[in-house]
Image 1: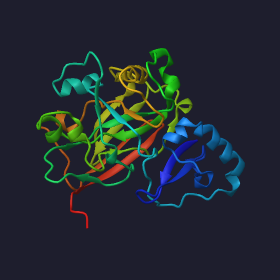
Image 2: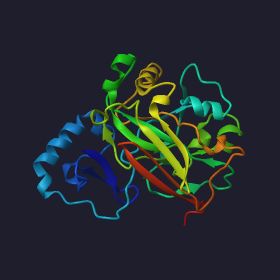
Image 3: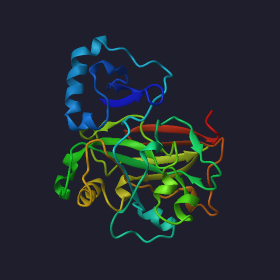
Image 4: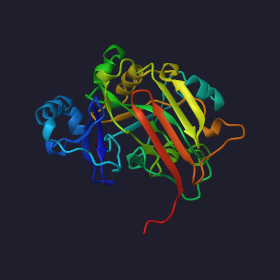
Length: 287
């Protein structure tokens, strides 16, 4: 069973996708996929609710908008330069410790929402990434225990405006936090349904041309290491999201660099976690 959320931005409703691909509206359960859900044994409660009421649950309408599969998290923690080939293409050294930064949670959006290229953007870039969702509060967790604190996984496109990220001084968060720069989904997959999060194929294409293709075993620091490491410098809470870095093939690494423009179509996916599609549009003032 996978979890997804559907409906207009800000009014999304929870749903499940069954093993045979049927999508059921579970909003009558009173549950939604945010911090309280993960903190209060929500997966067990949802499974029990769905088993009891499956025959009477309405189906998710065809063609409805799909939102982020996780409600806006308390923290969206990012890891930079976490694939060896990506570090090489950017001319950076492989880090001795995880490179940690944050992304504003106002950037979170649905997996098929338009990517809004920021006003006067010069260098908007793409990055397919595996996202891990924290399921239990953790502080000072050992690597051997870290995976017990992971609820599950989703696809994330860590969009980046390189001019703001790298050329304006200060922290990377500035180039990472524009609206629509964090599409998450299409669905959340519980940890027990993923055989090995360190052996997942991931890919991204631009206008039908493959740009990124790799496997999560190429990470410098795996999910367990990252959860443990982060728990030693901050409290991780249920619903927090950790996005684990991107492989080679980003626009910054092209020779010469290539960046997104209005009309471009970005498609991406991770084995077993689904696919995303975003159309790039130019920023315009909100009416």
